[in-house]
Length: 88
Image (cartoon, rainbow, N blue to C red; front, side):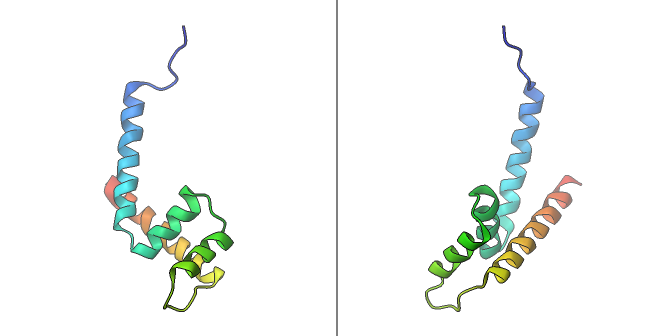
């Protein structure tokens, strides 16, 4: 017999945390959300992420890699703040 390494209560707690993270992501501004998802959920490098933003910005001035890195950083900061305030 194999023993489960995760109890039902741990599974429920993880599901709740995932739900909170998803809800917090939805509250981020569109570009910050796209940057955080691209970087951390899709595993894109900053260079790849910058290229995606450039491909999507038909009329706008293209973003530099440094600007995209700041966008990711601001998104993560806001995401942390949202999750902390939700935990209270």
